[in-house]
Length: 425
Image (tube, rainbow, N blue to C red; front, side):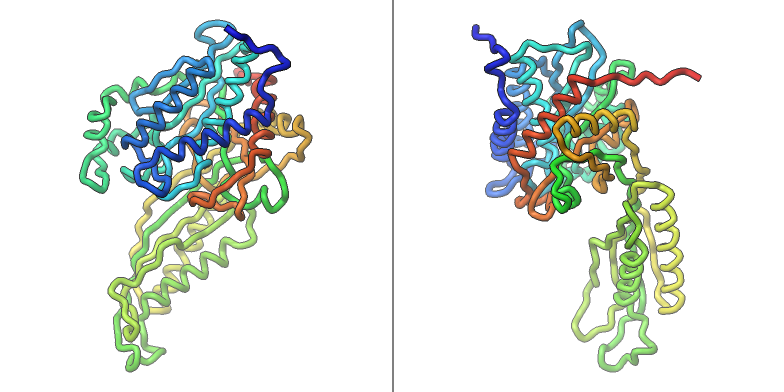
């Protein structure tokens, strides 16, 4: 059997080419033709899992699938059963997705492991790459299923959630050979884990606009979401005097404008009204009802909580002034997850080794690292994406040059990784 010598090891450009090619291959595994949609435990999802397992085996890893369907490759350390540095991301997608969201965080470390395997290099610790089976929440309206299983925080109540065809998650898992009763066994023992680091495209324009390839994530922003119904009084558009109207849509619009104003100019704080409907609306009718969503996120929980409190107070003032009733229902509330400073420092050192400036920035999107933070310290390395930072869309792109830099940075990170053991007080 041929064994590689240092002179014929894959270059980082070779690693990048492999990453980009494999992203194209994975994109062929889709639930529907002509667009990338890969949801939890569909045939396309199983095929993608099998493909990842084959690549992991080829890279010298032992491979298993846990009770949640996560694909886990282990590159053993110098000693058997050594604690592991965990990495990875998800291989499910949103509907009509891009090729790199989630997938990059599996394919990038996999290319690096293959390179170490070719050189016969091992570390004092194991490296495990987790292809999380579900993060997006598309099929069963529950997010982070794979990473919650790995972290031991899986909510068994979501097993009764139904997909669009009326099948429960429980039924689909059992039909796929995954038994919900065994989900507890998918949880990692925290003592066996040194840290979790996730590579991910930024899904935003900050790095792109600053002409930077890589970034260090400081925290994954917390988020609070509401669905709101505004109830006013419908009326004839021609005969209802302006001063006497109880226009539900204009009251809702005023709330949206206040959210935009309140969340401007504060670093890390964002507010969005992503859904806005006027049920049974007509051109010549003053709207008697409007339904809209609110999504407020911030790197710092105190900043988010104050913004939420201010928005709720403003809703009450608008309701009184416009004589419109608001029914506000909280649908989501998650605290921010800080990335461990000691890991941020090591990620920053890896970027500096690539002769790049170090940019720290928060992540406004949720990631598997949020769930993994329940059992270990986490870090994230952001990779620039193009097209204005667009993601969750077929126009999501990144370059092979940036993939090469990210592979170089992760290689340095792992080769110089120093575990952090908190001292007892």
